[in-house]
Image 1 (cartoon, rainbow, N blue to C red):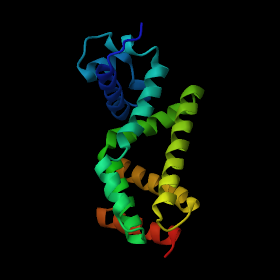
Image 2 (cartoon, helix red, strand yellow):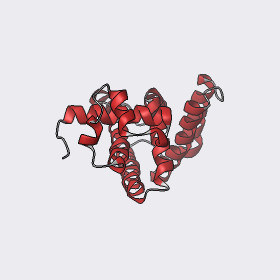
Image 3 (cartoon, rainbow, N blue to C red):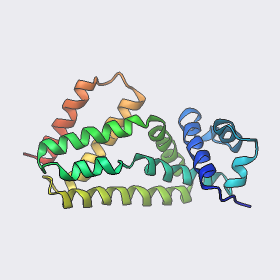
Image 4 (cartoon, rainbow, N blue to C red):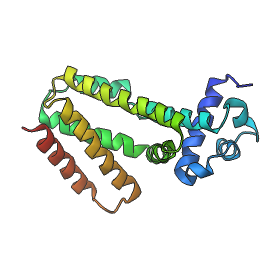
Length: 191
């Protein structure tokens, strides 16, 4: 029997993200999630049909938590559509993702696990594709410089920059990271 308490389910999924980031996919067990969430043993198994269900929901939850809040979206919509604004948006994106370090590390674990689990791969592929297309659509509607290819190239470049920052934080200083963001926007989007 799968439970329906949405707040408890969200807390368990958030706990699974923390476990994934800290212990990796092999460490993600119902018992580990129960311990992380501070709930009685057996709780997670009452909320998720199986481990694949938990992995899939963790992947979806990471993307949900990475979305900017409404105030940020509104401020971005009202900004002037120029290269400087674009550069600032990219810095904010990197800061938002980096601020949810465990979520991004969990997502990396999930991507590796997806190479062995077709169901998880399908869910993550759909989620990433939808995220990319939403970014392209937002970009095109905003009037910012550059085209859809530029958006996709920036996503690819900044994903790796984020990986470097979160896994090997000493590779680039914050100032170097900011210069790289500006250079990427400048070179990929153009003046």
